Length: 563
Image 1 (tube, rainbow, N blue to C red):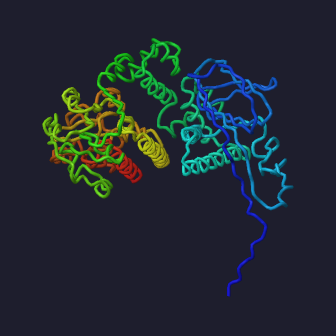
Image 2 (cartoon, one colour):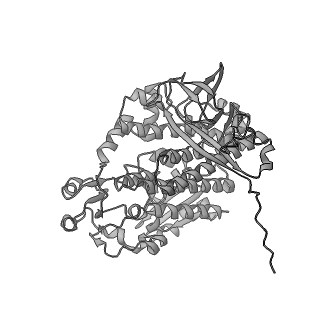
Image 3 (cartoon, rainbow, N blue to C red):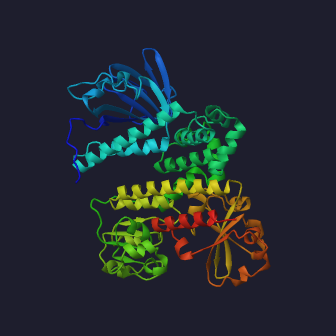
């Protein structure tokens, strides 16, 4: 016989955080100086740039990733003395607990309002007044962006989700605070935080010495750990951050001098020279070429009948099945196992395998949107229906998904996949670094009907996954000759030793015996050490979400098995 316990008046002890208000301030809409009255326990969270917070002649400067806790009944002055771009959140909250009456004397919970159950946090052990600490900037920003976006939702389920997200976010920052309070940060953690800082403050005057000093380790130790974590030098990493942000600003337009300053270059002419060295064309040429090739559009309604000559994987990942597609998009060998299981293409009309696609067939399908990468056919397609043009080299794979998601009113789905992918990408990089360290090189090859090609950063066949997502380094000759613009170069077999890295990934169409059986191939160090990985060309040729996930897994598995 089982004896049931009788219910008592004791209530399990728990704490709940309530989000009372959340505001976002940034330099584009906010004055450089303003006053703010604190009526509730409040957090100021710095996302980008820096701000000065002053209260009763006490000053503190906030930098990216830093959080400042403030108590009620105070007035602060917020200023931007450096007059540089900034972004921050100001969050007010309340704390509520449950528990039996005997818990009232617990020193962790002082000045409890017996009417509401809320805690007066002015002396709470959670977040003392003017307490400042730093956490991972990327995770911090992602959580707040989602909370801010859905803050006014009237949907009860979304409101519940908001509450749960806020509990998780508060748990995250409190755990980070306790870790920093109770234990000394190790060197690796300090360098990781420096990398987070660089992502948020790339526009500031950042030097290796300053970063090492902030991490409280020697310059030599800092640079070694930094290269181990990123496989790049501090200077190269910072330059890449600045150039990538400059590309976005160039497409939005504006004076070159303003863009240079915004990304951290005080000298417009130096910025122009560095941009051309890395990208292969001047900033203005880059912007003109991009704007000329990319044709975006905004639709008033969500399209239902879509024709595509490319980007099948992107459409399917967003839950859209085209009514017509090119033959190559319908072939089974081009599909991942997940696509085959979950994405039936029955009923999708085959439009032929040629570029351009057949206009008469497209017309008969009566599409309300056409998605294409063919610039030559754009004007003719546009006469049939609204047309989204995304040429192959016009944007990164992730940006292409964003563009398609935005056009289809499915931005949330696109951003969710991108966020999940970037998380998997970071985990994969960490696993590879732990196994292989740094200082090695990776070559990506394509053998097409006996012709051998060395592939650059934007060439497809896994290049994005290798060189951009996982940030693996190509041999120096390959980087020099291909740069940022060239997709590939054809080489003679005899030249292969000059381009071959410590690890080789190769996609093959047709007979491979002339290369694989050659003395040149067998003499390569990567071949002798069994560090050559043969890729499925049908799955490595695309850069849609299904393909990128599969490529990431194949590359990681291959490198982790390396001798």
